[in-house]
Length: 203
Image (cartoon, rainbow, N blue to C red; front, side, top):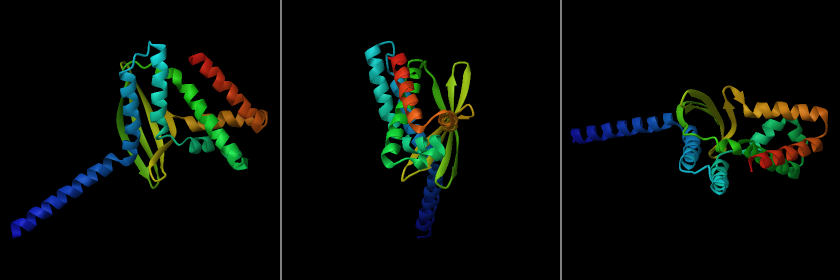
């Protein structure tokens, strides 16, 4: 009987240790891994020299990224105080435009993929916020890329920090400058023009 109880206690302790190990791996890290590894897999198996396949790859990558990126949160943080002055329909419009801008800005980077891999360096979590640190590994280079996440029933990404530069802060500075030179309507028009230019360049 004592051996049985002891065995059960050992198994329980091992289960708790295993669970703690899972927690250290972290739900935020797994959220990032779920999209980063899938994007790398798609790019690794694609013939990016073929224009029709390249377009298909972009659509597949977008579908993966859309699952974890919170464009509304990113748009709100990037626009700053002006967001609070917008109506619900204007916020929706700006969020969609912001998502289009991100897609257009980075779609051409897909064609430059050349076997890079991603390593997961660490994770910091503070309540509903977390940061996952990764390293993009190239043949002769290492680029730190950190993902900032917020827990909204599941972990979603609201900022990407590349070599110490926050993409949200970068856009906020650009938008603030544009707003100082014109109205919100002018900002929207300039962003639409920029999206069209980027799409034309990468088509």
